[in-house]
Length: 108
Image (cartoon, rainbow, N blue to C red; front, top):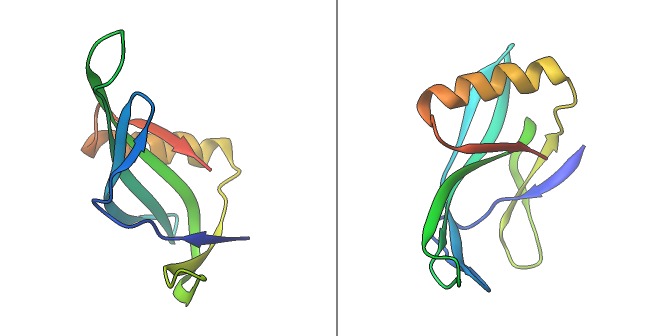
């Protein structure tokens, strides 16, 4: 189990070549369990190689408890179980890919 700190939506995070922000947080039902996923958008606009961007999805895992605590910065925290099963990774990637066909999907 991990303690997952929920990210602020629409909060820009700058990095050397651009920025990213999380734009959506949601759950999907898979085999009777809720799977937390967060959609983000990255923009590379300060690079010598040109301008680009991508949509990405971070999948922290199965929800055990939902926003039942806060961290030192008063951001909500949930208890999450990482998804270890390769078949679940494949299935969840397929499900998310239907709604976000060009997104890069990564599991924690």
